Length: 465
Length: 102
Image 1 (cartoon, helix red, strand yellow):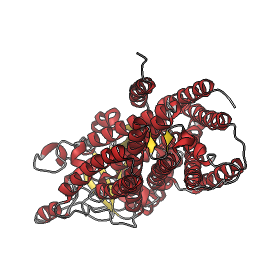
Image 2 (cartoon, rainbow over the protein chains, first blue to last red):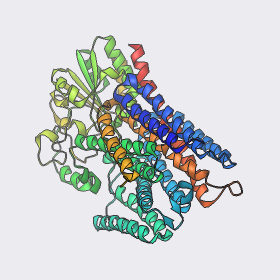
Image 3 (cartoon, chains in turn green, cyan):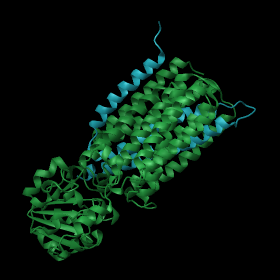
Image 4 (cartoon, each protein chain N blue to C red):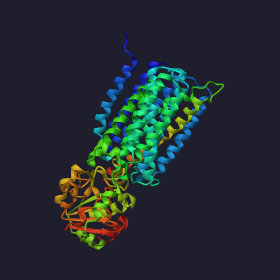
């Protein structure tokens, strides 16, 4: 058994190690070391908890058993999961953090003596407030992440689910959560606690269903943030520094990522939260337009264009991941490089289904990370490049965002693909992207549409090079 | 009058938000996915609360309602800790290979 002061110092150390873990991610070189700091911090926190309880009764065996069971499942998932499924995995993990926070809050509510919070029915007021906030945010994180997971997995339709009176209903539920917390604190009634949990689960569910599939990067980041605030709430209850520091770090991290994603789409956070974007009415507006001519070509034409280019910029999007074309793409690029053609990759902030998703997929396909550029870094290079190869991206290349104030995506930062001498656009059909609008790029003079599956087309081009 | 310890915890919390703000802005965008998986793993330090709950039973009754919730939370947090750190490790290893090839 170690003294509370000593264990508090160790918790502080593990909090600092967690900060270093995130700091390491500032460059790929230091990132692996950062991850080790994180693991070390976790080992310290868990060990100190055991030592500070000091009660190695038979319950200890069960603690180890449950850690091993959970750990094995976690390790198995971590090794098996394909990189394309990272968004689902992260959403799933968020739901677990949320649920764990709820369970810890329930345990603390039922047995406050074990946590030094008073006795059942007479819990310290401060602890009760912290506990109920942690539990409510945890429950919202849980049910919201489950919906995000189902939408990403395709089990639930990605289109927004809206109904009349949705926003007033959500507002009423949010207010009732505050009222319930107040009632819980004044009555200490366990019924209030259970109702609070149920209502929180419900609002998590209702908050995410109206948000469309295209906004999933924001939703995942937002739930990331929530999971942090839930952890911080529990940290206050347990008076645990490691948990408070971590909760604050994760909470602000998720908030920043949400902000970056919103900016990448030129949408305000509230606009995303209120949902309904990508509905069918916008599509109807545009389908009335007359058919415009497009130039389409085959793999042979594409290979010819690229062979005669001196620099090529690849613009990958989520479609590339769906077609599993990243390895075929890298082989094509290898062939181009052998012919002394300069190749770089341009990544839009919201390409893929979660922040940084495209970068991981390219890294998996052995693309060196110094050939991969963010929008601001590469956007000026399009004017000097010979060929832009758009594979699986759509809305993020649409010049309408710069020219048409009527367009729903007007003002969104886009890649200046149309400035290239020629554009090769791999796509299965002319159908609009997630935003539900037509892409002007399809009809440009210098665009050659390659109608095919991304993977097959890329392989065919490589053969023809 | 003594200062309530809550104020100290609140100070740590607020300062950590600022630390988080500056640290996360310095994370390179290409590592945003590993950032999310590692934040997932570290937020599962909530396992410390779960362990306290799990060990709250006495030797006569290891299982009471409170400790059962504790055990369940331990399993959930452990999935996250192991899964989160290992999948981050796996992703970061992919960023390493490229550098060697060059």
